[in-house]
View (tube, rainbow over the protein chains, first blue to last red):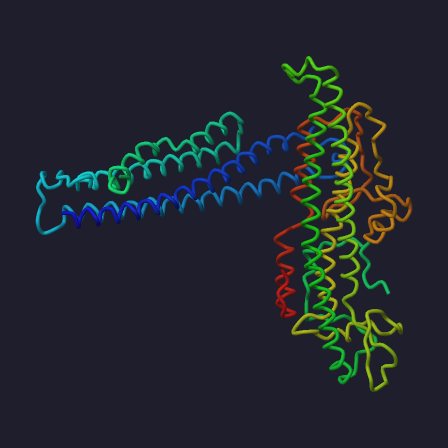
Length: 199
Length: 305
């Protein structure tokens, strides 16, 4: 039993690594999202020809050229956001893999474990049920958060056509908050699994 | 000596180097002298192109520091503009606080103004150097061509030596004129962008607070002593009027601009358009520039980046 708990803890360490990747991707995505939304807002200003004041209005076709370049750079930014989203997807997939492997350990083995065995606790060590549930919860959180992020990203590209500063602001806030991954809950799971290390 | 005539309008896209058509040369070099000419010409081209590559980097850094100063200038201008409507809270009891703060901001603004101007000067010097470099691709026979000891130089001594080795490929495929064409295409983009940046500098420097006309600059004024000399080297000075030519975009004709000079102070959005225009460099096709350096680098067997 103890050996199995050890194996689970190993998996949780892997989950932690994946979550570090996630955090890195999260900060990347936030900055990409910020840049894209400021470009979108700027487009609004650039579309108004009265804003080409001073000497600029003497330069033929300047507005079209500026708009074209901005659109190009917006497109590049959206592409890099999509690229980041793909990496998020990769993280979600490997979390899923870790979770499935973990479930196999208790369900697929030759000896079926009883409920009692699953809930048995030795000292501060977690029970096997704690481990299985923990992996599932963490995987669930990240999967739902990934889906939320995908819809935020598609909302962003839709806003290109009719930009609004407040809408962009709220999208960004949701993106930063990551409502599906409550920090305390995550910490709680890890505290149970690695209780012996805390003591 | 003038190998190029940059005044003639041309569209860079259509002038892809075509190695199949070497330029007409009045005196093709003899086989032996071609053999001697080639290594010198190769060395020269490698030098000039790595110079162009480093100048391009210098342009980028000058342009980005110019943008930073332009942004600071705009910010301090806006701070001064909104000073009277600021909610100062407890500070409002202090005597002359508004006046003192504005004076301080004005001082800062003056500093950013001079920094912006010096970034512009850097950009001008980068472009003039590029023009010089792009005109030094040829390699001329020095002294008599009958002499057994051939020497080469960067300038022509006799009129019937075009300095292109009779149009033969210098490395593998490209003749001298092919290298010149792409160099000209590159420099042309930077010249147009420099001209547009000058316009932005003039407008940004004219941005001032209380007295709209006192600080105001005109397009036809020299921004620093000797500027017009530099501009004429870049073909940016009109020969008839001796004034800088008005900016145009790549592929556009420069017609007489109808400038509606409004003496209103520019608002936030107008300034944002200035800064955006500065940053995005409409005249420089970054993709094409990379392509040029990659193509040339491949031809001269030398990484240019």
